[in-house]
Length: 121
Image 1 (cartoon, rainbow, N blue to C red):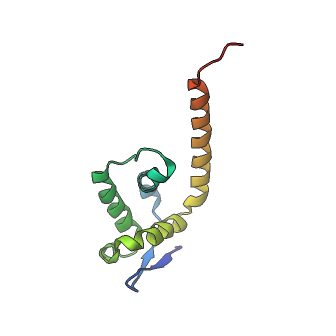
Image 2: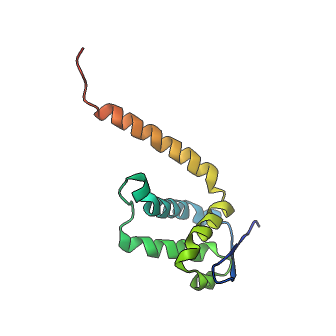
C-alpha cells in the first residue's frame, strides 16, 4: 500500500494512506468541495460549501486519510496545506483534477457563449 508521510509544524509525522475503493466516490467529491472552498476567493467564485460545513468535511477527510485516525488531533491549521497535498498525492488526484478543471473550463466557456448577447450583423 502506498503511504505518504507528512511532517507537521510540531515536528510530529502523520501517515496518509490512499482511500479504499468504497470510500473513493464520496471522499473525492468532498475533497474537491473542500479544495474549491479554500480557493474560491482566489478564483473569484462562491464557495461550494457553506462555512459551517467546511471544517466538519475537512476533519472527516483527514481522519479517513490517516493511517491512525486519532493523529488528526495533532494537525493544526498551518499543517493543512501539507496534509491536503499528502492526501492529493497518496490518492493520485492530480490527473483527475486536471481533467475535471479542463471540463469545467470548457463548460464555463460554453455557458458564457450561450449567455453572451447576440449582435446582429
